[in-house]
Image (cartoon, rainbow, N blue to C red; front, side):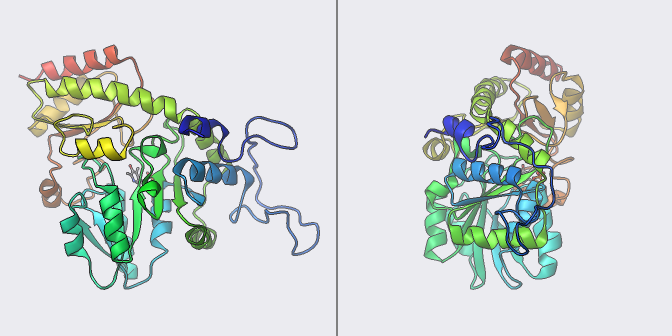
Amino acid sequence: MKQKTKMIHGGITGDEQTGAVSVPIYQVSTYKQPRAGQHTGYEYSRTGNPTRTALESLIADLEGGAAGYAFGSGMAAVTAVMMLFNSGDHIILTDDVYGGTYRVMTKVMNRIGIEATFSDTSSIGDIEKAIKPNTKAIYVETPTNPLLKITDLKKVSETAKKHGLLLIVDNTFYTPYFQNPLSFGADIVLHSATKYLGGHSDVVGGLVVTATKELGEELHFIQNSTGGILGPQDSWLLMRGMKTLGLRMEAHEQNARKIAAFLEGHHAVEKVYYPGSPSHPGHELAKQQSTGFGGMISFDIGKEENVDLVLGRLKLFTIAESLGAVESLISVPARMTHASIPRDRRLQLGITDGLIRISVGIEDIDDLLEDLKEALDSLA
Ligand SMILES: *Cc1c(COP(=O)(O)O)cnc(C)c1O
């Protein structure tokens, strides 16, 4: 089955009892047991809920994994995955990893003895250098946020296997429609479902898929023990969003390609980061391992003052955190998503004060281009 068909027919569809074609919202916490200690597959909704199960099996199908798990947010998903490790373990993460992931590793996981090194995972040499006797996993985001650096999933997976490490991939930016990390040998894929999977800026959630049933069982144990589950209403909303994921991703990308080309030709723009541009250093690699380049673009307009001028003039790009929804959003990583990263570290990574990130929506491209042109032309 192809991905767009799986989005409609994958996982668990409809309701056998009534014939309803959409999975019902099982707004329930507990389930009647025919005899004490005997249950019908569901006993308590932290452990399992039929609406959540349908979502979990859908994401497992889309990522081609053995099992899926749904959490109350992307960060709850990241945290649950980290709970697979023990005090004294060391994890190597992509250096310009999502700000919240950086924060949880450096302010929370460190307190319970899980050590992190941030390394440029687009360079296998840098990963090899960071490996220590207690290293247990490599955690990769590709493309990264906000600079859209690409990591070679096949090579990093070979490196992980050679050293007996788990490979974890945050696939939020490309989604299973454009990229399937498990097919390159990753062990765990996770998502902030708040972004493209939900796609409508109306739900916060996180999803994890494991390559094997065993790893899935370990993760379910953590999910049930720590309890950061997604509720049935939000599980249903996510499934509803995911039915159109393929169509939306295609529309996001079509618009993004045109916007990236426009930005590259504009005098006020110093640098454009978009993996779909042939000038992007990760372009060839992205072409090999993904079926699309996505809808995220970052660009640098130099001075910090320029940022407020441009953002103040835009009408169709809403200033907001988050990404991946039908409406175009714009953000300033240094002040917003990456504000929790110290300034010198940010500058080291290339996240300057003049860097702007846009999540290209699915509005009519002519309107988006006109809006951007009007705002950027205002800069001398
Ligand atoms: C948003 C995001 C997260 C965190 O997800 P939440 O749903 O906001 O908790 C993790 N990784 C990436 C790449 C993200 O964009």
